[in-house]
Amino acid sequence: MSKFSFFLKRLVRMDWKAMWKTAGMLRKPSGKSRLWLLADMLRCALKYNAGYVDYKIAQMYRLNDAQRKTQITRGLSNQIVRRMNDKAYWYLFDDKATFNELFKEEVGRGWMKLSPATDPEAFKAFLAAHPDIIAKPLEGSSGVGIARYTQDDWQGREDDFLKELLDGQIGIIEERVIQHPRLMALCPTSVNTIRIATLLGDKKQGIVYAFLRIGNGKVMDNVDQGGMAARVDLESGKLLTVGADKQGNTFTKHPMTGTPIVGFTIPYWEEAKAMCLEAAKKVPQMRFVAWDVAVTEKGPVFIEGNSFPSHAVPQFAAHYPDGIGIMREFREFIDI
Image 1 (cartoon, rainbow, N blue to C red):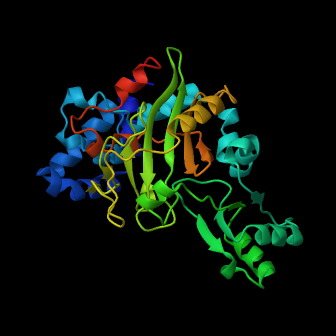
Image 2 (image 1 turned 60 degrees about the vertical axis):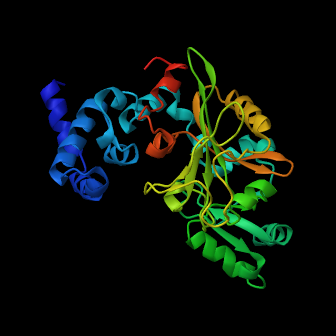
Image 3 (image 1 turned 90 degrees about the horizontal axis):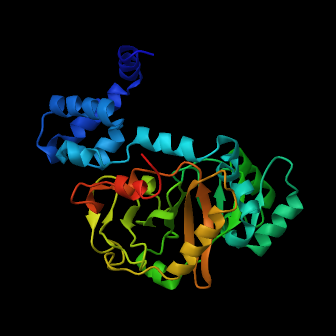
């Protein structure tokens, strides 16, 4: 394919409506015109393989070319994942029941896969043993379709409840994790999980980045569900930065609890790192995995693993005021 053909293909495939909308949203914070932002967004797309979400989250309008070159953009992230992860093994992480079975020791809680063939009596027995559950689709991301239920939601109507879950495309139910009191004090409405990304690179193997996801009033801590994130120091387990959400809001203290975010120390940090590093060896065909880890009073447990790790949240502009992205961290592990 010629460069001209590639250029035309990229132009046709761009989401111009979303780009125009994003340019409108960024006019005020950037002080730039909508047309200038659209043109700059197009330039970043063609030169750095950056999507409009990359442009917004990293605030690329404030960065010079040297800083922009340090960003792991959507296009570059896709290349890394396809290079490091054998697609034939993605299902081990994408299917939540398969993941729970493969990493059952690290998951450490009761769960049950649901289908039209589910035994109603076994379902009732699970509910009787676990009066507080989390229901999820078998596949999916960003917290979509996940809900919490307690026995008040099903008491005396278990058969109807099973039907409602199946009709709602729920494929797995799990015993709800009770998080460590220190994390509960940070935000009690959600289980606040650590995203730890392991990379089994050609130059180095280990943890490439980590951040703590913190809820903000909802059951989920995910930034797509209104939560926030803060960078974790890989050595100490302390939060290095303010909490930041997808809209660019920043928080030095949690807005609900008043608990300080900067300097907060994650309990069982060494154990959480060790668990992820050991698990990373279990499927060597998956060399780049993002693990979602909850911490209980007894230690860390897995919530899930991600075959296609996020590149955007680790590069929230508030977490890198110098404008330098996470390219340097990745280059310690692999050649980019």
